[in-house]
Length: 179
Image (cartoon, rainbow, N blue to C red; front, side, top):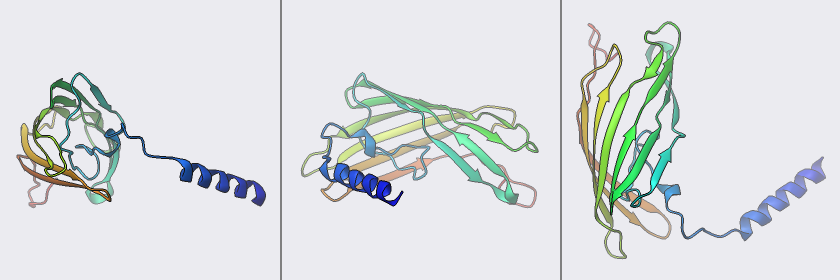
């Protein structure tokens, strides 16, 4: 048993050490809304490309020990050079005691335009905006967001600077705490 584990470990290490970077990949480091960090990259989807982000699951612990499972698929299409349009449909599922228990929370329609491509001396700069229209019986008002995005790649790391202005609708209980 130990010998088999050692063989697997040595095989894995040899494979890891012999691999090299794929020069054509850049999507693996893009971070979009709906992911835990909520950082955006200043590089939109390529022209005529379709980007499907179907793996954004999140489990959240709410107040009073309640939980919520949230799934937020996103589809982006490169409409023009350096321009993408996107659609996201967040859906949720909660415990039995809450009504509504699950469904589509709304639709977010967005766009991103890259003002400057990343070069050796300048970072990538982009503007992004989204309109989110909530759905369902307890829907709040429509939200808007506008982001300024800056991305610069260095050999050890990639640095992102995001600044945004957004409106968010919230409800409060009579005691003043957020629901």
